Length: 252
Image (cartoon, rainbow, N blue to C red; front, side, top):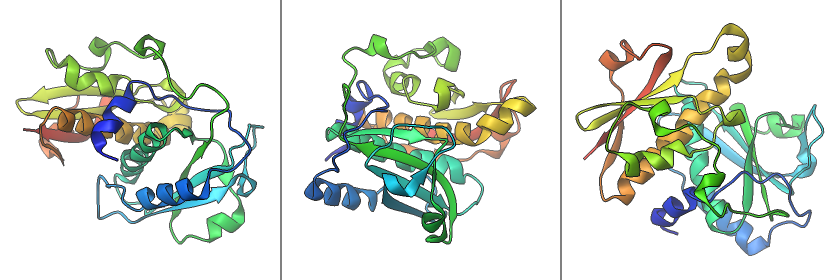
């Protein structure tokens, strides 16, 4: 499946929270596993591991409807690892949605001890997936409850490029991102949080930024441009008030 199909999926995907208990067909599950092995990282120097586990290997302090399948995502804890996971797993989220499979990022549930012990890397997050018992896709872009472009960027005249970023998913729909531009480079920043909010949301917001960066690179490439992730120390030291720097995207 080509990434241009992922682009169109951005405008209709949604988080699915109600699944059929019947597992996914084995042939499709094999295809999902194959795609899982081909995910493009934001930072190839960060080791990651993704396991497909069943609902019986997932626990949660808050009662939730379970899915028959989950991705358990593990990573080295290097700088940028959370954003890297967001970037990688959003590819999977769009792949599933484009193939008629529901999915949802899971911030609260955790794998069982057996699953945690099966990896030498740090557990990051779960993503549920399976056959949806609810409508898989949105039917209209107005169904996205998102901030306006003016609230997430000061860039003008790039609505087509930035709309896929605007409607990207985020934890509790917080949409923590802000974007500025310096010639052909777009800089991505994340909202600073107070102490209490940071305890709850800082981890998820960094994953959210990876999701948004993937949507941005996908949008640029859909328009026939080349997108390259770069890091600018000068920009890092001069973020907009109330934000901190994540990364930049050079678009040609």
